[in-house]
Image 1 (cartoon, one colour):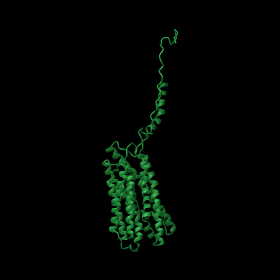
Image 2 (cartoon, one colour):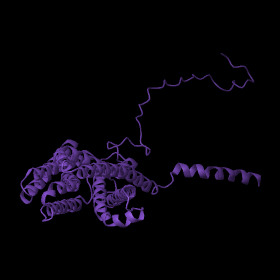
Image 3 (cartoon, helix red, strand yellow):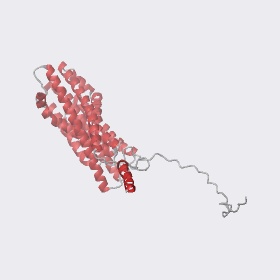
Image 4 (cartoon, helix red, strand yellow):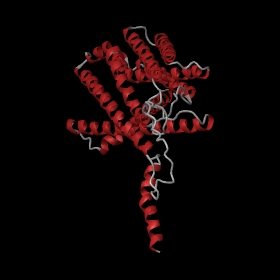
Length: 365
């Protein structure tokens, strides 16, 4: 085609038109985390790492083993006291929940301490960690059973306490080896705090009974007992949530000082850590009802009053576990939420209208 003189195309030679390259297949984009990274392998970790160490696990192990020893000693003192007599079975049934809860927490804490050693040596595979943690719980349970059989009277009641305590320690070790180590440390810390709080709260029961209107009638006593139990459960849940949040916060700051690139715990970890003590209390109740069923039935058969007492105590323990579960989870989650700063996107959106108005004001001038 020739260009006409004077046309706009006269001075421009014909040039071949280059075709746009065919678009190639776009790389598949996988789901990214909010920071633009690949999803973390640990669902509770904030980035692509895993958390296999629980800070302070050795201290937790010593504290929980000491608490287990204290529970075993107090139970033995109650059973072998001169005043016990034929009520030794009833006293054993009353003391069983404290021993089982202590054994469950001790097995978990010692398992965390041992798996920390594996992580330091680079042996942090999930299967190996679970097997070692379960084996550690087994050793703790066997040690507790041997101590019970050597120091208590050799009878059927003693064998039930020893066997159930051993089972609780094994289950505690397995639970510690199945999840995030740092969250496990928070759960153990919070659960131990709840157990200590419940024992300390017993000193405030009598004043609270008077405060809630306990009188000479059976109805007033039952009503006051319900309110005292609810108050105890509510406060125990607050203790659980605050201790879980405090442990995870301390562990995060400690990790940032020692290993800046180590994974942090996201909000589901705080939620699980706060709810963990309630879950362990409910798990302990299952162990008590399965492993210690023969002892509980024997104590309930002593008299109608003992039967009513065992039923009431069992219901109270379940209610307490549920309260601690929900209140602890909510407390830990709210405490974690209060530490979050506004996101950069929210700040930009808030500052956007003001920045957009500045050029218009300059143009008017």
